[in-house]
Image (cartoon, rainbow, N blue to C red; front, side, top):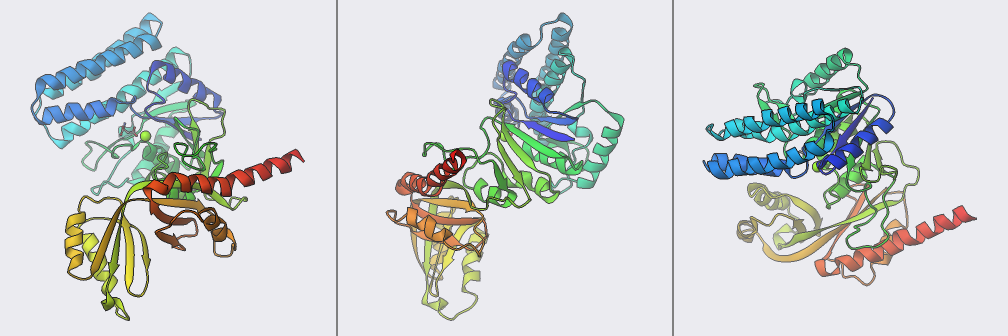
Length: 450
Ligand code: ASP
Ligand code: MG
């Protein structure tokens, strides 16, 4: 069994829903199809819920009307036969009336979660009705009947897999449609897996039923070897390990949140990232098994980095100094991304500088500090295990004209990161691309031709 997840853009219009239906029918075997809300919907629902919170009834009703008009137009385009069109309109009336009635209620976080759930409930109902109209055997199963979180907001895996197994025993349709994002909490009330949580739903379902594969359909053809906004001729990476994908994810390879694929990694379920708008392109397969071509996989960069250089002669031959430094960051709930140390100095980077002033104040009490901003971290991800000689030389050879501020290597076997001024980022990405990929690609092509 496979789990297929389609994001907001993939189900964002009648035309795209048709596309999704055709992809699903092309994938062999039985599948659970997880859908996000149509693109933009959850944002509008958040707005509506904020208006309810601030007792702004008219703007809330106005947003509901606006959203309803959009859905009515999509439904008119999707359904041709009278019976199905009528069913679709009844469905819209039901959900939009329920939103209108919530505007009159007193705001609570429970109410907010009920409002947010409407996006996924609508997209899945509409889509499954469409499959029915097209004559495909399918069944809509509410995620609220199996997706559950505990008191800490963590998924209750035992409950999820127990419930799903029972559901699958009873239903043998080839296509089961369900909602991403939404769940019930330990009180049995509607809750959610946080914004962007549909990937997490797919990963949890895949892990719970030991699926053969999880396919995440998005609007790009997988993970690219470099940032296409700055580098020409990037290509999608065919295979990548979970570790490498996790290293890249922080650096704005925005395709998948590393946390969202954790259940898939733990239960060893391969994740295939595909493009809804180009389903024939291979996409990127993320898995746990050893990838034969073990070299550099991809490069990514993150801007808006602040470096803090800490110097203290009290560090010389002392212990406990780093603890004091880290405590300051802990106290201000700021995570440290990169770190290098010498005997008397430590340099570290943060990407969230909202509490920088307080951090600086507190650090000044224990050491001398220097702050630098407008920096970028560049991450080279791949198999950089210790027994591979020459790979660091290859990387730094590309960068001989770039002033590098900090280097982090050896923290994991899967990444080498370094810090540059943001003004040098684009050049660095291009130089690395040329040195690490273009030449080897050319070589590969040559070998194939010969
Ligand atoms: N619809 C939700 C959101 O926009 C969940 C998702 O799309 O993954 O955050
Ligand atoms: Mg998403």
